Amino acid sequence: MDYVSALVPPVVMAVFFIGLIVTIVKTQGGANKAKEDAVVDAVLANAEHTRQTPRDTDA
Image (cartoon, rainbow, N blue to C red; front, side, top):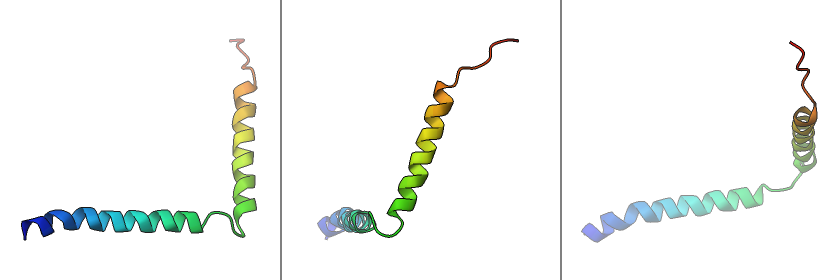
């Protein structure tokens, strides 16, 4: 019976991990995809603009 108690935690973790991956794959796209893409594009554009803007070093 020791082998059963040794195998249960990895099997349970594997089942939950597979469920997580399936959920992530199923929720890709959909109605909110355009909204999410727009938010990511805005954040990336803001970060790129901030990185390229020279600082005023007059102190």
